[in-house]
Structure formats: structure tokens, C-alpha cells
Image 1 (cartoon, rainbow, N blue to C red):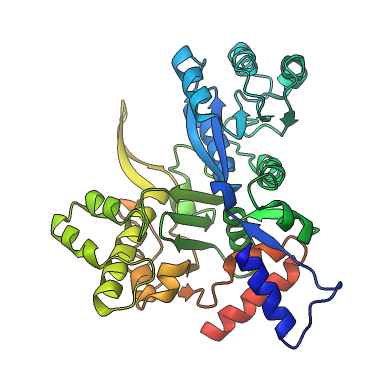
Image 2 (image 1 turned 180 degrees about the vertical axis):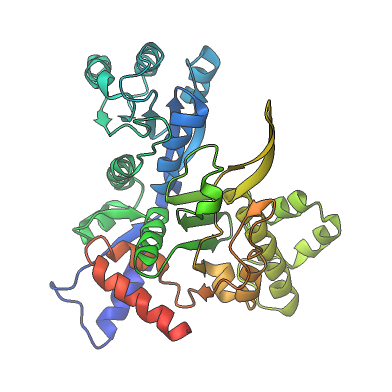
Length: 398
């Protein structure tokens, strides 16, 4: 709310006074996003696809299960008390009984939280009846995995956005924000992903690194290269988001040191500040940001491994191929406010090796004006204008 009030005051004080004709768009990560649990039939198919959709829509995935829910898993769901439960499972016209039983067990938890079903289409009616008897709000999305090797996550993302908007209005202090905008409140990660998609549509495939104090988010929009796509073990969405909750340059600085096992740097945490000012503080934040980008890039990108088969050894790929991206973009406070952001991002442009990363020499763009999420937010209504803004931005960098 303070951020919105300050923005509105700046408009009032500027050349364009705030009048009824001014449109207000808001994105927010208030309440930490939606706590979500995801339950599918097999992890490598429906559970993973559902998780991809949830992350792209601004949800915080607290638990993923595959197969029949047991008592321990049901107990953990009660303890998590999610804001939304996602039930998936089975290709269309495929397996039924496990998904139906999971629906019954979830309905009997007594949580009274909305459930989204995005599984086998032939089960929509019986699953609707199961949750109706418990007076639980059920939303139906298209199957996230309608056929083997076919991902369909966009319809589910849109529904999760709607649930986010309904939920966030009830968070403390958020009611007035809902009254200020006619467009709904977009989850900040969803806004960044939407901006990434429009950038890729107009300018070319991209990967966006958003390094913050608590997390590092990576958004990529690319189909990868034809060379590596033939070796993929599992399909990947064109637009993908990963959230690294242990990689932050302030709240999670100690976790980064533990991951890289650079114990000598632990003493440097005495210089840690949320907003670094001195040379030592800036140097530490730069180092933490470098490590956060490198680790998050490897976690997001595809990994090349050897698979041994009866006919011999062959190379296989699991994950997101980033070798075809045309731009690497840095946003967030750490990359745009601390000197050396371009050099940090260049370090992950190593091409195909153990990990399928952007090619050496891939152009780097820094979101110095820190407007990437804002552009994604207004793109709900003005996608063409946002695309033009991206084109102008790239032209200025050439």
C-alpha cells in the first residue's frame, strides 16, 4: 500500500494530475503468494506439469505427491493448510481410480479451501459431485497432460491467477488495493513471466534472472534448439519459471555460503546489508549475487547425462534447454542496483556442456529502470504497447 500511495502521489505532483481517466494497475506478492499443494498420478507427468503451472502463476508449492495419497501425506496437507489444492492425474481417457480416490480423501480433509482439478477429462463430473457433497469450491481446468508428451499448462495458470486475485483481497491491508484497480491484482511472478513471454514473442527467446533478498527467480521462454530437443526425456513448457527459495542476497545469504561451501566467506557476513553502501558491503552483495545467478541457472537449465541401454550408451537431456535464447535479462534489486550486473550474467553464458546454458556472447540486457514486472502488469490490457517498449529498449542497447 505505501508503494501504491507513493506512486499515485508522484503522478499528482507531476505534469499529469491523477484524474478519473487514469488507469491503475497493481501487482503484488503480498501474503507470500498462494500456498499450494499439488497431487498427481505420476511425478514425471501430471504432478510435474501441475507444478510448472503453479510456479508460473505465483503460487508457492509446498508439497507435491504422486500416486495414492497415504495418511502421512494427508496429515502433512492438514498441517500446511494450503490456500489452494491442485488435483491432477492421468491422460485423457486414461487411469481413473487413483485420481477418484485422491479426490475423496482430499474432500474429507475438512479444509474448506478451493480445489482445482486439471486431470483426466472423463472424471470431471464424478469429481464435481465428490466436492459438491462437502460444499467445497471446485474449479475445472483443461488437463495439464492430455496426452503423453503433451503439456497444456496455460489454462491452469489462468485459473490460479483468478484464485490468487480472490485470495489476496482478503489479506491484511489489501482490500483498498482491490478498490483502486478495475483489472484485478496480478501476482508479481506472474507479471514477470507475462512480460518475458511478450518480450520473446516480439524480440526473441529470452531468459530472465530476478535476484532478490530472499529468493532468486528464473523465467525462460524458449523451445530450445532442435539438436537437443531430440534427446529430451520429458517435454518442457515454452514458458517456465523456477523459484529458488534458498538463494537470496540478504535473507538467505548464509544459505548461499553453505551451498558453495566457501566457509572463509562466512566472516564477511558482518558486512551484509539489505541496501549495501560501503565498498565491503557492495563487494559482498556482488559476490552473493554472482553465486545466486550461477546456482539458479544450473537448477533451471537442462542437464545432459548418459543413459545406458541394451543397445549401448546414449546422451539424454532432462530440463530446459537454454542454448537458443537470444537475450539474457537481469532484473531485481541486486542485479540492477549493484555494479557489475552484466558481467555476472555473462558468466552463465557458457553454451552446451553438462548444462544447456545460453551461448557465449549472448546479448545481456539490464532492467535499470526496474520496470519489467510493471510492464507485465499493464500488458493485461496493453500488450502491443508493451511489445513496442521492448523493441525500443533493445534498439537503444544495440
